Structures are given as C-alpha cells and as structure tokens.
Length: 111
Length: 121
Length: 98
Image 1 (cartoon, chains in turn green, cyan, orange):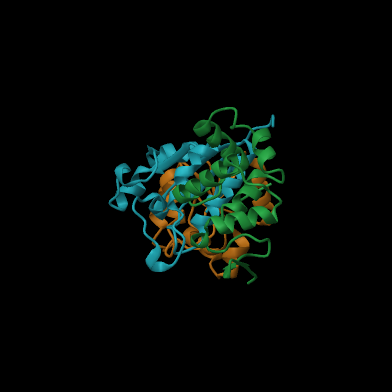
Image 2 (cartoon, chains in turn orange, purple, brown):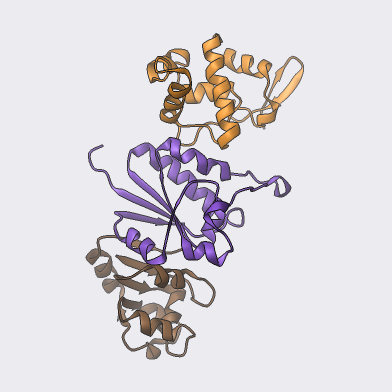
C-alpha cells in the first residue's frame, strides 16, 4: 500500500492517491491533496469539501456529481447548485477532486 | 434519454451474510445515473436490509444501511416491501429505516409483471 | 412474464416465494429446481395447485441428468433447450430468481 508523508506523519493512500482511512483525514491532509491537484483552496472549496464529508458521514457513500450538484443547490442556493460553479472550483471533476481532498473514496460510478 | 425503461431490482437476501445486498445497492446507484424508471422490491430475507439500527462495528464490515436513505437524492423513490415477508420476520413498517410502500404478495407479483427488466439479487 | 427457478425447493425458498407472488404467467424449472416437478416431492401438492393458474415447465435435460424424467407431475410440461429459448422469446420479460 503506498503512503504519503505530511508533517512527519504517514498516511495510507490507494494507487490513485485517495486516502484509505477516512478517520485519518485532517486539514493538513486536505491541503496536501489540494496541492497535488493544483487547487488553491478558498472558502468556496472548503464549503464543498465539508459538505462532502457531512454527506458521507450521513449516507456512507460519496455522491454522484448530479446528486452533489442538486444537494449543494438545496443547501447553499442555486448560484452554487450548478455544474459550472463546481467545475470552476474543481476543474477535473468535482466528485473526483473534491472527494480526494475530503479524504473520501472515489464515488461509485464516477465520471 | 428518450427510451425510458422500467427496471426493478428484487432483493431477497439478508445483508452481510452474502454480498448480494451490497452489490444490488451499488448497481442501483449506478443505474440511477441513466435516468430510468427504477424501483426496488424487498422480499424474504431482503427485508432485513432495511432494518433500523444496524451496528456493524463488531463484525468489522461497512454498515451500508444508511445508503438506502440516500436513494431519494438519486431520484430512486419507489421502494416496495412485501407484507408477508415482514410478518414472517416479526417486523413492521416502523422497523424500517426508509419510507416504503408495503404490498401484499400478489400486488408485488403484479408489479413485477409490469417491468421491462427485472434483476434479482 | 417468465419466472426461472434453479434451486431445489427443499433447500431454498425461491420457488415458494415465486408461487406466493406470481398470479399468472410462466414458470420454468431448471437445474436443481427440476426436483419440484417430480411426483412424490414435498412440493407436489403446491405444484399441482399452481399449475391451475400458471403454466409450469421443466427443462428435460436437467431432469434426465437426475434420473427423474419418468416422474413428471401431470400438468407440468417438459421443454428442451430450444423450448427454453421459445419461452424467453414468447414472454415480454423474465426474472431469474436467485
């Protein structure tokens, strides 16, 4: 199993760099993952990442993009509940990149 | 997609003992992306999948029962449970973790009849 | 609708659940489910009763393989592999009970 080292601590990741143990996640890990993905984290990024973690906590899955978009819109308003907004934040796919930063597994049926 | 088909997933196995329940759920989540008319039927030990209060820490297995509550967000809202199967297991609708429609055996059979595709797990 | 069963009725409840829910259509017994089509099996009375409303078929090669081709319950029709295909083609949909 590959691992990454952040501030002297080792974390297990899979072949694609997703965190293995959900419980290992912290903001250091999130910032490291974001850096790997060439993302500069803003409040808007954190909003999505934290939302994903809450969603996972409640349903035990990472949502499909369509479901994430709808749920974000419901919670934060229609100006954020659209794929254009989410792709601006996470250009290589909101589910894929945001899940990685959030320390979640890659979503089932992810595009 | 113009050609919408009626898909029914028939679940007849208890969770955790075999992989069927989890596999079915994963296929349902993937199918939901294709904008089809998806419904889920729970018969026999399949009704145990929806039992409230599952705690899997002791068996070191992922508890996937909360995921049934995510189905609504995936626009999968037709969940049918057979009355006779509930009764035979001492369960009632109040024991289930999601809103379902409870049907008698023959009503369930009639619903299967109406489907384009029936996948059994 | 065609319902396909492949488990012995004395080990699994697939056939029983199928008979409980299904009100009309065809049932095809294959593999270990062919035992349900034989005289003297504990399911015999249930099968005779069901054959009134539902057309019940049994896959003959599977019965022959088990040495029971001479004990088919009256009212249950035997089919070969070609007959199996015809049944699938004749029905709008089908369900393989697991």
